[in-house]
Image 1 (cartoon, one colour):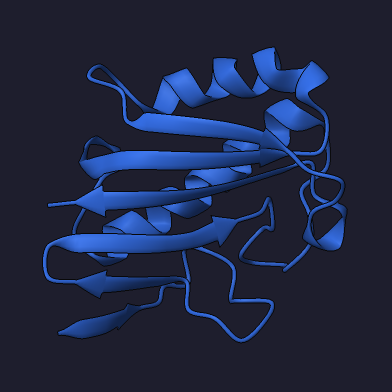
Image 2 (image 1 turned 60 degrees about the vertical axis):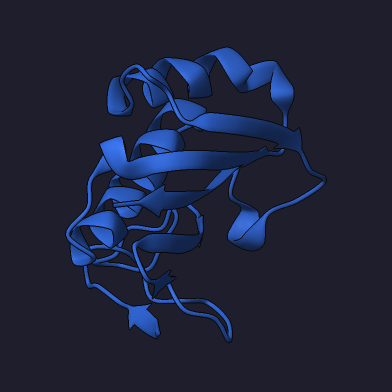
Length: 125
Protein backbone atom coordinates (compact mmCIF):
# COMPACT_ATOMS: atom_id res chain seq x y z
CA UNK A 1 0.00 0.00 0.00
CA UNK A 2 1.26 3.48 -0.95
CA UNK A 3 1.16 6.26 1.64
CA UNK A 4 1.97 9.91 0.99
CA UNK A 5 4.31 11.42 3.57
CA UNK A 6 4.07 15.18 4.14
CA UNK A 7 5.44 17.38 6.89
CA UNK A 8 5.84 21.05 7.71
CA UNK A 9 9.40 20.21 8.88
CA UNK A 10 10.44 20.25 5.22
CA UNK A 11 9.51 22.65 2.43
CA UNK A 12 6.39 21.98 0.45
CA UNK A 13 6.98 20.49 -2.98
CA UNK A 14 7.88 23.03 -5.67
CA UNK A 15 6.22 20.89 -8.34
CA UNK A 16 3.80 18.02 -8.89
CA UNK A 17 5.41 15.51 -6.54
CA UNK A 18 5.21 14.30 -2.93
CA UNK A 19 7.84 14.93 -0.25
CA UNK A 20 7.99 11.16 0.12
CA UNK A 21 6.07 7.98 -0.56
CA UNK A 22 6.08 5.03 1.84
CA UNK A 23 5.50 1.55 0.45
CA UNK A 24 5.48 -1.09 3.15
CA UNK A 25 8.56 -0.52 5.29
CA UNK A 26 10.40 1.48 2.59
CA UNK A 27 10.39 5.27 2.26
CA UNK A 28 11.26 6.96 -1.04
CA UNK A 29 12.13 10.58 -0.30
CA UNK A 30 12.06 13.19 -3.04
CA UNK A 31 15.17 15.29 -3.45
CA UNK A 32 15.43 18.04 -0.88
CA UNK A 33 17.00 21.38 -1.70
CA UNK A 34 18.11 23.95 0.90
CA UNK A 35 14.78 25.70 1.29
CA UNK A 36 13.89 26.95 4.74
CA UNK A 37 10.46 25.39 5.42
CA UNK A 38 9.32 28.53 7.25
CA UNK A 39 10.13 30.99 4.46
CA UNK A 40 10.33 28.88 1.31
CA UNK A 41 13.63 30.62 0.49
CA UNK A 42 17.09 29.16 -0.12
CA UNK A 43 19.20 29.51 3.03
CA UNK A 44 22.02 32.03 3.00
CA UNK A 45 25.57 30.79 2.73
CA UNK A 46 27.47 28.24 0.73
CA UNK A 47 27.61 24.47 0.40
CA UNK A 48 28.09 23.91 4.15
CA UNK A 49 24.95 25.85 5.10
CA UNK A 50 22.98 24.42 2.20
CA UNK A 51 23.92 20.81 2.98
CA UNK A 52 22.94 21.36 6.62
CA UNK A 53 19.51 22.69 5.61
CA UNK A 54 19.01 19.89 3.07
CA UNK A 55 19.78 17.20 5.65
CA UNK A 56 17.59 18.90 8.24
CA UNK A 57 14.78 18.79 5.66
CA UNK A 58 15.49 15.11 4.97
CA UNK A 59 15.33 14.47 8.72
CA UNK A 60 11.92 16.11 8.91
CA UNK A 61 10.59 13.83 6.19
CA UNK A 62 12.10 10.78 7.89
CA UNK A 63 10.52 11.74 11.23
CA UNK A 64 7.14 12.14 9.53
CA UNK A 65 7.34 8.41 8.81
CA UNK A 66 8.70 7.54 12.28
CA UNK A 67 12.23 7.03 10.93
CA UNK A 68 15.63 8.63 11.40
CA UNK A 69 18.94 8.82 9.54
CA UNK A 70 19.89 5.30 10.67
CA UNK A 71 17.11 3.95 8.43
CA UNK A 72 18.63 5.44 5.26
CA UNK A 73 20.06 2.73 2.99
CA UNK A 74 20.76 4.84 -0.12
CA UNK A 75 21.45 8.52 -0.68
CA UNK A 76 21.94 10.39 -3.92
CA UNK A 77 23.66 13.77 -3.75
CA UNK A 78 23.42 16.24 -6.61
CA UNK A 79 25.88 19.15 -6.62
CA UNK A 80 26.45 21.97 -9.05
CA UNK A 81 30.20 21.97 -8.35
CA UNK A 82 32.11 18.90 -7.14
CA UNK A 83 34.96 21.20 -6.12
CA UNK A 84 32.87 21.61 -2.93
CA UNK A 85 32.57 17.84 -2.33
CA UNK A 86 34.70 18.03 0.83
CA UNK A 87 32.44 20.70 2.37
CA UNK A 88 29.33 18.64 1.62
CA UNK A 89 30.96 15.47 2.93
CA UNK A 90 32.02 17.14 6.20
CA UNK A 91 28.38 18.03 6.94
CA UNK A 92 27.02 14.71 5.64
CA UNK A 93 29.15 12.66 8.06
CA UNK A 94 27.63 14.55 11.01
CA UNK A 95 24.19 13.15 10.14
CA UNK A 96 25.07 9.55 9.25
CA UNK A 97 27.02 6.99 11.25
CA UNK A 98 28.54 3.63 10.34
CA UNK A 99 27.41 1.55 8.69
CA UNK A 100 26.91 4.42 6.24
CA UNK A 101 24.24 4.24 3.56
CA UNK A 102 25.26 3.55 -0.01
CA UNK A 103 25.72 6.86 -1.82
CA UNK A 104 26.17 8.37 -5.25
CA UNK A 105 27.30 11.95 -5.80
CA UNK A 106 26.67 13.55 -9.17
CA UNK A 107 27.61 16.95 -10.57
CA UNK A 108 24.76 18.60 -12.44
CA UNK A 109 24.50 21.78 -14.48
CA UNK A 110 21.80 23.34 -12.31
CA UNK A 111 19.35 22.63 -9.49
CA UNK A 112 15.94 24.15 -8.74
CA UNK A 113 15.92 27.72 -7.40
CA UNK A 114 19.68 28.04 -7.82
CA UNK A 115 20.50 25.50 -5.08
CA UNK A 116 24.04 24.14 -4.92
CA UNK A 117 23.06 20.82 -3.28
CA UNK A 118 20.11 18.43 -3.48
CA UNK A 119 19.85 15.09 -1.67
CA UNK A 120 17.34 12.28 -2.05
CA UNK A 121 17.21 9.15 0.12
CA UNK A 122 15.64 5.73 0.39
CA UNK A 123 15.05 4.47 3.92
CA UNK A 124 13.94 1.09 5.25
CA UNK A 125 12.42 0.45 8.68
